[in-house]
Amino acid sequence: MMVELPDSDAVRKLTEAVERLTGEYRKREPPGKPVGIVGRYSSSDTSYQKVVSWTVGQVWERDHGRLDEVSMNSDKYDKTLFRLTVEGKIFFKDLQLQSTLTLPFRPPNELRRGEEVKIECKSSDGTAIIVTATITGREY
Image (cartoon, rainbow, N blue to C red; front, top):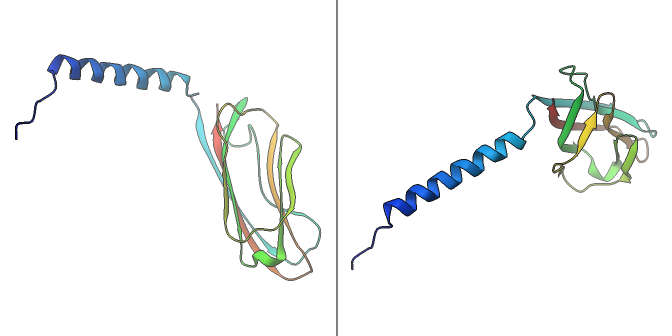
């Protein structure tokens, strides 16, 4: 069985096209610095308490930010309720999870300096809970 090799000119053109597209993608990607914030909460409060938050500009003192992902978990999912707030808008509240939740956010989702992303939790019945949450993004 004979295998026919692709035309080297076609391979060169394809390689150039991929490099051009990669360069265009990088131009659209905002410059900036990564943000990764981890928070932990341990208590039995039945009112919402902050686990972790990020206010754009607090890490790198930049004027803009982009939220990439939030993640949350608990040692007692059946007793933990979560609330996520972005830019003052409650995305969900009283959410009871069954396992770790990771939510990716896709561009465009530009945040301005001073806008906040916050993950909160509370115990549903006063049982002691341990919660960990993360926020990742970029400031530029």
